[in-house]
Image (cartoon, rainbow, N blue to C red; front, side, top):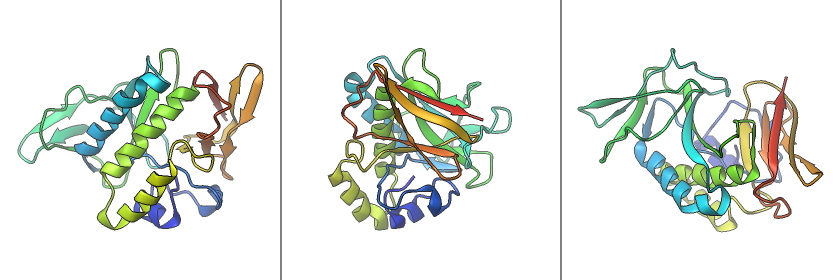
Length: 232
């Protein structure tokens, strides 16, 4: 995901090449940290979810995906997560779809840590309405997820990158036609489309076909439009 080249360097989400990203676009990144993540970013994402859910996805739930850096599942048996405040640890149950929620997060200053090596894992927000899957979902889910991801990034931004974040914030990271949510997939993409009322719009797909970007600023697509990504 790319906010600007400098910000991309500060928040490298995946080992994708520059050819995967159109140079004239700005896309919103999700908060994707590995090994150790301050839970203030997770709490901020949860607050953004509750604030915007009614407008975009009233029935949606928020979970957080645990993945390898290339977007492939880690497998719930190979990774362990826990919240820690430096003296105590609270195990974080990982569901069969490699996701978790914040139901076990105690109040106070906690970190999310993993048993895997640093930079081998990433945490991604996942917003889905009932009946949806990670690659077949409402466009409103994607709009809400964009706002959750952006809020998580802001909560975890290094001090030196703050001015760049401010520029993107002013432009409207989840509403501008030049911005969108960039998502990495575990396998090459065959098709990625948003459809509504007989109309179909192709999502932007990266050169290596391992990523896609939704047109978040396209107000001709309603929240009930369907996003469907088919992989090889």
